[in-house]
Image (cartoon, rainbow, N blue to C red; front, top):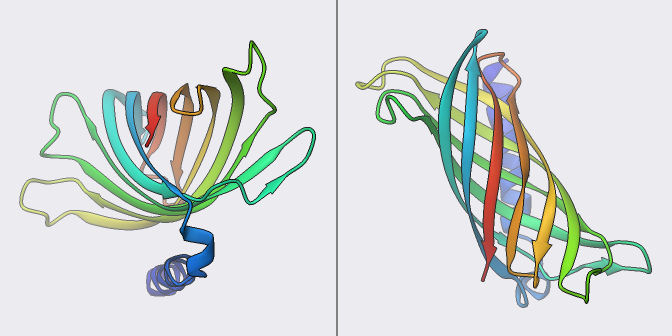
Length: 172
């Protein structure tokens, strides 16, 4: 069953990366810092995460919403007390929706939903690893279409981890 999930995730990433070059020409690189906590089997720890990704320009826009595609987002999450011992690496793709601008056209709300592959390494020698389908949902505010501040929930389907983060992001 794990092989099927891994294969399905690889196929989804292949489709995401082989998308039309026209969609990717006017995109933006993104970076984010997450601060919060990871829950593993009921025990919680303070944690942080770092992420980088590539997002297309708005693909659809109307009076009340604009949609963009998060083509590929790579993230690394680890607890504060042992960042080398417990690592989660995620490769995800998804969609991002923006509200119309408000507050002198400087602020806009956003929400995002992404899914993909997560690799967990829970020992220093790499012997205890797990593979999972990961889901990320976030909500927040974006300032001047560059800086963002929000909340992110990350969940892995094998029950190993659930994370709650405050997110600070920048779009280049």
